[in-house]
Amino acid sequence: MSRLFKDIFIQLLQDNDITAYKLSKVLGISEAVISQWKSGRQLPKYDSINLLCDYFNVSPDYLLGRTDEQANVHYENNVSGINFSNLIQGSGSVTVNSSSNDHKKLTGEETEILDIYRSLNIEDKSTFLNFILKIKKEKSS
Image 1 (cartoon, rainbow, N blue to C red):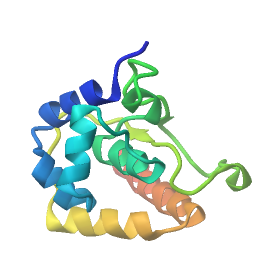
Image 2: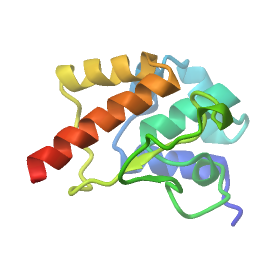
Image 3: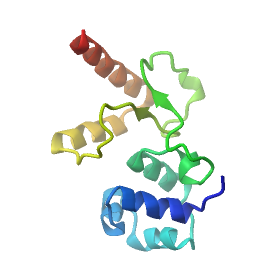
Image 4: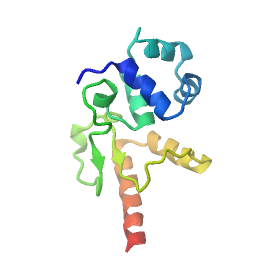
């Protein structure tokens, strides 16, 4: 597996129907930097890789061409067993299995929830996710 970052990045932009301009506004990254990524003249820095992985819901390994699997960590049941001492906040990505593969635009309320979630520390994120899973489980019962 040795696809180039620039090719993967361009494909993600196309697949998600987003322009470099819009992505720059959403992520707070200059269009010039995004242009450098698209041309292959520059690779994103660590923080930008995390932002891109979160935005496109892909793993760093996929983004960097190390695997064809877009996401390699699956969140299915419960996160209460996480050993917090082994985690670094903001590292890695989680895929939530969905009944629909559609990429829908977020509502204002969903965006606010996401902003709040992103501001939490890892333990509070775990509590938040467990709460949502509890509601989901109760609703399906």
